Amino acid sequence: MSDFRMIIRAHGGPERIEREEIGSTPPKVGEVRLRQTAIGLNFIDTYHRTGLYPMTLPSGLGAEAAGVVEAVGDGVEGLKAGDRVAYAGGAPGSYATVRTLAADLLVPLPDTIDDRTAAAAMLKGMTAAYLIGPCAKIEAGQTVLVHAAAGGVGSILVQWLAAIGVTVIAHAGSEEKAAIATRLGAHHALSCPMDDLAARIRELTDGRGVEAVLDGVGKASWEASLASMATRGILVTYGNASGPVPPVDALALSQAGSIFVTRPTLAHYARTAQERRALAAALFDRIVSGAVAIPIGQTFALADAGEAHRALESRSTTGSTLLLP
Image 1: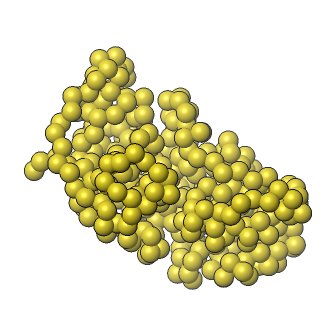
Image 2: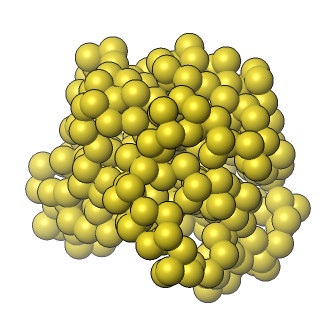
Image 3: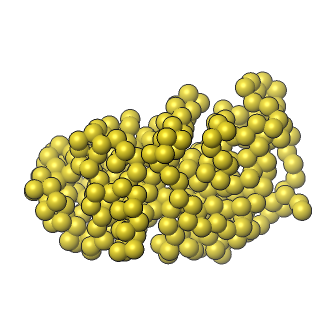
């Protein structure tokens, strides 16, 4: 069977994703050719497809995958043909059977991490690692609200936070998804309407609010997140599942309790190979220790990427979703 990738030639709905046959590109200086075995699906892929994050077209899609090195270019050190690796980030284009990319984007996989787990975990898990660590600097004893707690990033955040001694309040879009968050370790799991959420948070925290909110929902949850904050807490809005947040009124942050707000991205916390490998190492340690499990809720054939996007956007998925070449 010939190699192919899934691309878009125009922004729009899932029907814009089409298949393109490709050849095998020899790696240039500093590059590696990777035979991909599993590809992760993430909400950012839909932002690229719709044009919320505009790209030069035509363009590939996808930000993470795992696979086996087929060939290395001149100047590449520490990697050789046959090595198992994974990556998250870089230019979109992971929706492919084979890919040539910069070697410093790749993270070697330990024997204890299988390819599907790596593809399901890299982007979402490294996101969780930087959100909890260098971004929000969350500590044991704090109380944290996690939105979309049964989703790809949310399910990892809930487990990781509970493992380090944080009181986790999870919010999900249905009772079924709230039950998943409970099984993942959330101390309180809610599925109430956003209009009621802040009041429930105040009840659970004796009126104090939470020290941090990790919010991948965006527009629909913004007001509830802000109203749930403790004084001098940090609101991390890291995703736009419901659309981008509205313009921020600085005075409203003061009135809410001198709140810190940040809109981070993994690229700014994984700027170098050293930073990428440090985040990946922290993630792998959590997985190997058993503190974090990576639930793979569903898989799709790579050629059915459009159907996978429809499932993700309809909120019918749980845990991580994989595309399989």
